[in-house]
Length: 219
Image (tube, rainbow, N blue to C red; front, side):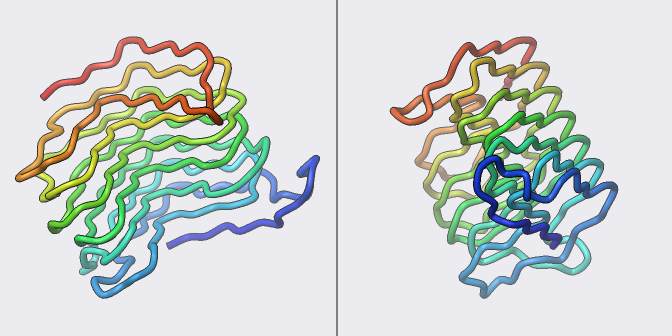
């Protein structure tokens, strides 16, 4: 895939890479069926004002195969006071029976905007693990997750584990979850729960005011 790995600078974090962008790229045929490590379509760390916009990510396209372990479409993995945007991306992923599956995952702090992405055709070849179409976790300044389309066109062959269309765990004072469409969230033989929207507020990431509006969740 594509990796931007900046410098792990100390506060005030001014030595992070600044304003890098991944725009209108096609990322496919990544990962390996026999792999025991994680695979990433686009990954960044220690970036500020990083944008991932207009990309098509599909690990099995171009003669690719189901990845054997944890698989990411987009991962923003580390950063403090780091702004991050993921917009207008099309993501389809398939993994094997080990590890977890993430469409878009943000683990950095700062202002986070995840919007107008299409996440569909996620596949799992049996086994367990968690599935996160959109995943955000961090001590964010602000969060906006809006106008995304999330769905499965065929059943996930997930025997156990949890499925989250949108998972949010953060400390932002204002969290906007709006205008998202979530449908066809069905599986084959499955013993775990399926969540349209899941907000986790633990002891370290207690969230502020959440505005959940104009979202459609069905089936």
